[in-house]
Image (tube, rainbow, N blue to C red; front, side):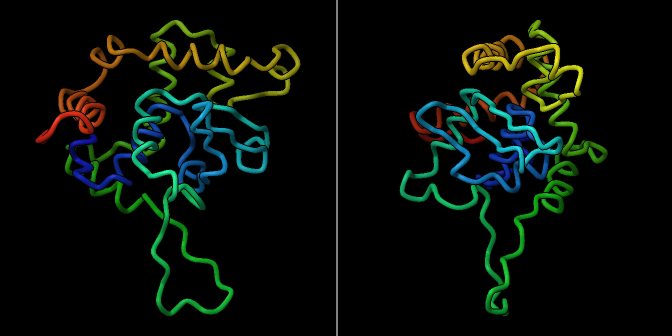
Amino acid sequence: MLAAAGDKLEHRRFILLAVFTGMRHQEIMKLHWDEVDMDRKVIQLSGERTKNNSPRKIPMHELVFDTLSDTPSTHREGFVFKTRVRKNRKDGEAPAQWNFTRRWEKIRERAGMPTLRIHDLRHTFASWLKQSDVAESTIMELMGHKTRSMTERYSHDSTKSLRRAVAKIDRNTLSDTLHDDFRDRLKCDRLSRHLAGCKI
């Protein structure tokens, strides 16, 4: 899938965030650098930003941290996914929201998966956590799947325990579930800053 995204950093970055954080489409599109703590390697969403109005913290998988690190610290302000401002935009009019939907349609066609939805990437994250024997309550915490009974029954997991859960999505899990081109692209992204001429 990343191979189908080509060399467009923002496209590959969106896919990595969807697959390795379980964030919803709209949550990713509106992700702000103020919500990204690179020092603690955590994405912190306020209740205003989530579907169920509950704040959520998501430890970064190493691949998410790597792709976000590609942005120089001097440029980490505003939205992570920026949009071009229309030349004919009226004074005071907000710029159009960055939209991945049309780009996604082309990417999935190139990947030979014309029916794959963006939301399916979020499901992949949940599936990997289940395969890694992560507790259901922790998966729900990371995914933002909270019900009143869940809130009453479980205390919020600590950042440390959530980080351990995300870290369980290791190379063995990836090798069992990813197509070769996706896996090779991930490897390339990790090593691209060290190795020259990596072309997938």
